[in-house]
Length: 263
Image (tube, rainbow, N blue to C red; front, side, top):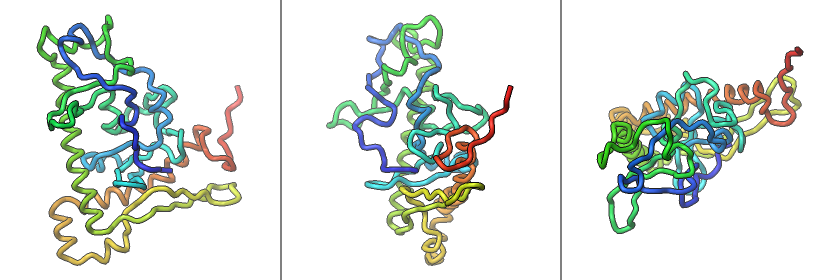
C-alpha cells in the first residue's frame, strides 16, 4: 500500500526543472498533458490538508512511513496500480476530484539558490506540456507573464501555502503522539483468505478518545479535529478502491476477476 515518502532530489513525477523566464520561453505555450504514464501507475499521491474534505469522498487518506509523515491520497492499494487514472494518466471519471499535486504538474515553485528564500516558478521541460506549439496558451505577452502564467503562479503559491499548513498539522499530530502503524484486511467473496495491507500510518482512535478535554477543545477550535475525522472517515474508501481495482482487472492474484462480456 502506501510506502515511504519520496526521497529523491526531484519531487515525484518531475524529471528535470527549468526556471520560467521571458528570455528563454517568450515564444512558448502551455497545453494540456495528454500522456503521463507515470501518473497512471502511481498509487499514492501527496496531499495537503486543504484538500482533505474533497479527497475523503473518493480516496483513503493515509500517512507515509519512514521519516517525516506525509499525507497521501491512495488512488490504488498496490505499487504500480491506479484505479482512477488510465494508462495515459487521464481520469477515468472527470467528475472525481483530482489531487492538487497532479494538477500542479509540470509547474512548481522552487528555491534555485540555497542561500536565498526566494522561490521561482519552474517547470519540467520533459512533460510535453510546455513548448513552441501551434496550439495552447501563450506563457508571455512580450516580456510580461500572460494571464495563463499568472494563473499557474497563483495556483502554485496556494499549493505552497497549503503545504505549510499541512506541515503544521503533521507537527501537531506528532506532538500529540496520535499516529500509529495502520493495517486493513479485506476478505473478498470467493477468496480463500483476506488480503492484508500495511505500510502506512493512521490516527490512533483510542489515543484520540483519551485526549484531555482542553486538548480536544484546542484541536476543535483550530480546525485540526475536523481534518483528523476527514482522514478517519476516508479510510472506509479502502474497500471501494479495492473493488475498483478488481472491476478493472487490477485486483491482486487470488481474487476472482470480473467476467468479461462476450461479443
